Amino acid sequence: MSGPPNVSGHPAEPAPISDRQRAGLHAAAVHAQGHVPPSVPDPEVRELGEAGLIETIAAAGTARFGPLSRAPRFRITSRGRDRLRAEPLPEILVVPCSMGKLDVPVARAGEMYVGSYHVASRRAAAAASAGGAAQILTLSAKFGLLRDEDRILHYDLRAGDSGTVAPEILARQAHFLGVSAARVTVFAGKAYADLARTVWPALEHPLEGRGIGQHLAFFADLYNPGRRVGPRP
Image 1: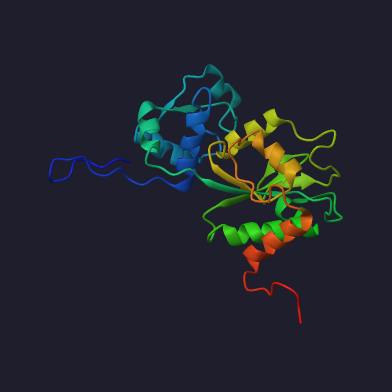
Image 2: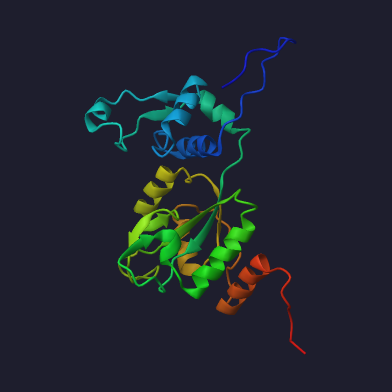
């Protein structure tokens, strides 16, 4: 992925990498063993290997468990770490789950939550994502970090209740998704922000110290910036 020297004799600029490759490298860089997340697609992994940014792990069990195993297969190289100095962190916006859900036993995470707070938070996150530049994840008290396409069972649980997803599960999910090293903003209340901090201690929480009404006003300012403010005549 890095080009040959140009006519002036200087090395060419390195070829660009995709958002998933960039996120995967950042996640590998903060992993204790430097493992590349298995969620990075194989064709993009091969490109990273050809560029010398990652290397194969000689794991005897990989072949035995098959190609769909989540066993680590690659790790970041020193060249990969050097490359990250010029690569921005991925941006993640976290919204909370809600007690209000579809009356179905199972659904996609992007459809299951219908509570008014979740809907407002998601609309605000979509407005803040700058045309999709930031990835939106739902933090479920039971299932942890969810993409919209993830299918989940109906449940009744709030963050902080007995049975809330464990921090070590969240950490593994964040690595698998390639978001363990990211710029994270949480559009949720304190309980969900505290849970998210177990993975991202330096996250941004613009709602900290505000009441529920201020949360909703903050969301509305993002998804409907032209709305009327102040007392009506």
